[in-house]
Length: 287
Length: 294
Image (tube, rainbow over all chains, first blue to last red; front, side, top):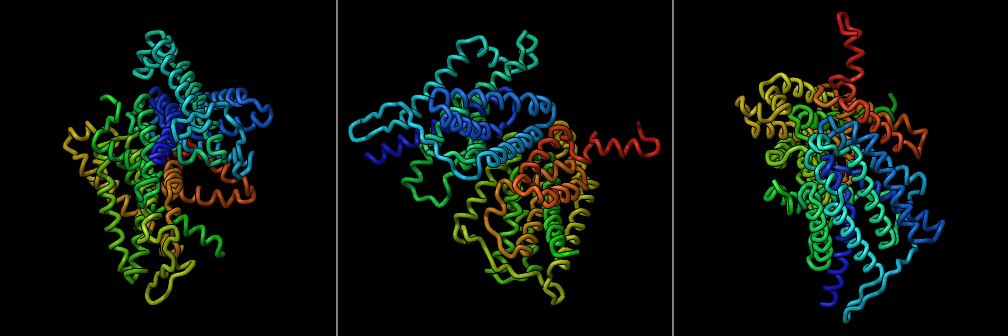
């Protein structure tokens, strides 16, 4: 029982990290209808920038801030110079561009930082919580708290602010939103800033959680999170979060208990194909 | 020609065959597929298993391999009837990951060790090596190009073009989207199967990572670079992307970086590819022709 609860807690932590990466993807898909594979590269850059800032300053606040600022910058560059000019082309064109960006950013990381695994020796100042025999380590509670904070922030922005209203309007219909006096291009850039900052947070958290930063750390999340936004319902933020948490728990428990012959990374895609075949609007999507 | 050039040329020819299949699915029928390497893998694995475990010759195995690939293409083409564009793109990515996992984790397919000891192709009692094998690949490439050309002239080909441009309009003209899409998938995956079988017999050792998702991306990149839907695109794309890493070889560490940046610049500024409509090369050729628009 104790082992089960520990597995469950780990699963929720992994699910939270998936959720942080998938959020940005869902936001971008919601507003631009582009499968932003390069988001995972932004996440890798976030981890590297965070590590660099941490080594130079030693301050965790600056680590997160630096990662978020640098990733926002990259997000905006990708949006302005690659995605926006390609919007009028069929969807596979920005998708291939995105994959090319992702691979070239991975290469840049490898060329600058080297192909080896770097360690991220940071300690997050979160308390260790003990529930009876089960102990939630400080890293785990950090992952929970930061994810909850990000979700709360996103919920407040999208429901309580004018910018959130504009974002929701632009994701429904850009020409109409423009006609209503919304500068949709700025809204798209704002979406990229928010999504990329969250990716930076996710990258730094993963770096600390596994104590590893390496150039191809984005390769598996890149495609798994695409599957997650499908399972959650294209562009639906709550759906993406629920799907991520479910996948995190399912992966951890299946590996721990059922002896399935398939690797855990295939699970997300099997779930996705099942969803597409039987409930193609996703968990929380609407048609 | 020295052995080095022949090796690269053979790989280019095999890739061109697989990309021709992708062209039928993506370029002609407009069904985006990001999992083409999986079909190449199915071809390679079935050829390898039939020749090593069942003891068939390449020539006896080839029709079976192509049939198996076509049937699996039919099966995996079914999602395209239900989902479109972005969804189909992600579904095919998923299919690629799942099939790679099946090859890697099921002992029947050799698991992580792959399958080795695949025999050479024997033709008229001679074991095909180097240049002879390359000629065989060229012959198959020629056959595949003829089939592609014939497809673009046939009723099914015209129907698939109509479907690519506007599915509802095509359906209202009496074109069955189900039949045309599935036909394109069957032809495309059968060609991928042929490419895979040749690959298996050329390398004589295959493992799951030879058919992973990045391979699908490079196959699609070849097609995009050449110009989707153009008969010659697979050939041009395979030659350019096959030879670029070799040309960049002096850059050693930086060559993959240059390769990806080139792909990015290409798709950003020439999304229709080198030979696509409205592309730079097309315009130059058109204006150079007598009577062409300047």
